[in-house]
Image (spheres, rainbow, N blue to C red):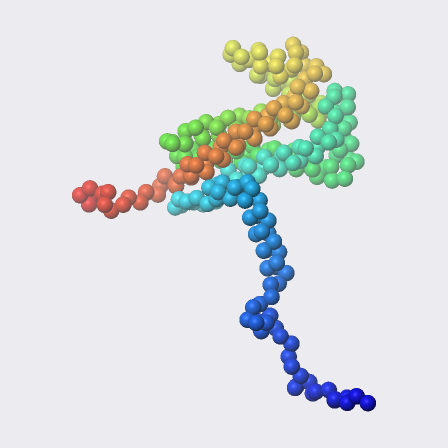
Amino acid sequence: MANLKPPLPRALRPKPKGPSEDNGKAKPGRKEKLAQKGISTIDWIDERTALSGGARWVMFRKIPRGTNWFYTLGSASLFAFLSQAVTGVILAMYYDPSATRAYESVRYLTNEVFLGEFVRGMHKWGSTVMVILVFLHMGRTFFYGAYKYPRELNWVIGVVLLILTLFMSFTGYLLPFDQRSFWATTVGVAINGTGPLVGPYLNDFLRAGPEFGVTTLARFYALHMLVLPGAMAAMIGAHLYLVARLGTTAPPWLKADIPADSRKDGT
């Protein structure tokens, strides 16, 4: 018959080894394992694409003294553009750019589609917010003197982006194709026709013919969904490249730090 030893008291039982008692090495937790997998994935991608150098060049740069919340207007404008792009793609899935079905498709999207009214509201009011943000960003750039050498080209690109933003808002106003958008766009196109030299040609181009007809809606839809977003994306890419390359400027009321050895006669 086997000898059965009585169990040891609880106080005399050996304690289980903790993470710090396992040969002096702590076992990695769940968060550490996920972090290690993320690092390995990034290393795998970077080994094949060499993107880390470009990411560091874009993200890590010197920030001048006096940087404040007004410097975030550019990032806010970019976020507004991305929001308009995402909501615009969702709306395009239900919109029918025809003179007989445009209004009905907008009504169906607003009243019948799940969260359709919310997405349309984001797109509608987001366009107004984007115009305001772009104007504020341009105003900050002007009053801070960020349009001067060597950033003149970036200022020109910003002016082009402002014009494209206004044109984007104008072309999108017709798409619901109700009475208000129809007559407001008719007046806006007629105003463009009063411009010198190119006014009449621009008028015919926007109307897609000599008169405001069924092809005008298709022309505005193509401009709003294809031409203008592509042009804006290209301009934004060039704009961000120049910002990363040239950096940002300090407010004009802050004096630059001049090295002591470059001063003459103590001045």
